[in-house]
Length: 411
Image 1 (tube, rainbow, N blue to C red):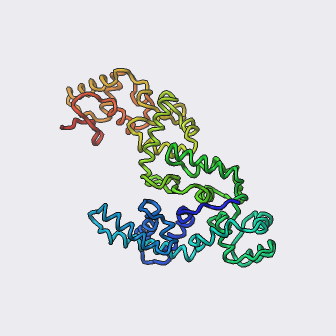
Image 2: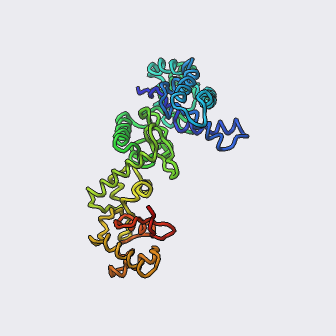
Image 3: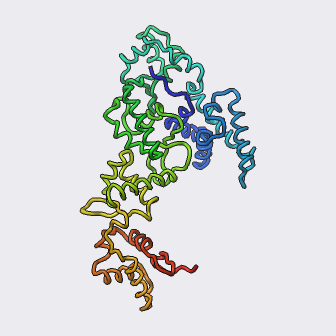
């Protein structure tokens, strides 16, 4: 029988987080969304940072809250900020942490009952497990009717201790229905899910939840896992600690990543691997479907966003035969002396007293090369065109784009 991991991640499951946010809003109707978000975030401060005490210890140990206060105060004493004093910072985070503990005590008491559950979870009678497998493959609820029926079917009293133990070895869906892990997915599939996730996290530092779900959609029980949100909750329950499922800032994609570090720093590292693959394995030009095949736990949408935000000076997005491709500048097929051609075009515009606007420079380049420059090299928009010009300009004086003019910049 498999027992869920005993660590801070159980408090940070997305279903718990979402319920906590709703609880904060309901209990504090006069709070703004910003205030709710602040306390929601601050409550998980220990989960997202390392201070010598874990979120689990802070919530479950008798002296956990005091130790959390001391650890945070000590950190800010050693790392002072201009706006907060150490004790003030510690009090602020502790207030949010107390609210999280109150919420969990009201709604998920089994998460706090660590010792009781740890002792009894491994000793859940086979008769109870067999009854769940036989009679509740479609799900079990911890209400009076279900509990009485399970007790009758198994011949075992389902008291609070037994309920707490069962909740620890079952997957809880966001609608409050529980399933034995073996009903959701067999042990081999669960191991494969964890191994694949670990390998992706090791290689890339993150992966996209909906794409991860697509890889295992046909291997998990659809009666238990209805969608990517359910799969995310299931992965959070069986996966390793130190991994968070979050919404990527500014772009919204749901990803799993290690707790340490910033999301966009991780994306920057992913972008470097994308550039390397396109350059070395696809000779500078790769369509988005092939790229998705190579990075199968990232959607074409997320790959495009990572490239647009993190590889802007190395890759461009073009459309070739109605197919989206990503190319290095070197793969565009520009003349080998394009930097010199560009410098001459700019000099020519200067000679006749014209500002090097994007249109004027484009016309000059097109005339010098004998082609419609943007059309010939499949440049999809003016932004891509401006990035290409800036990348290939090697002459003096230094120039940069401002208000669509590639003007000189004073030293």
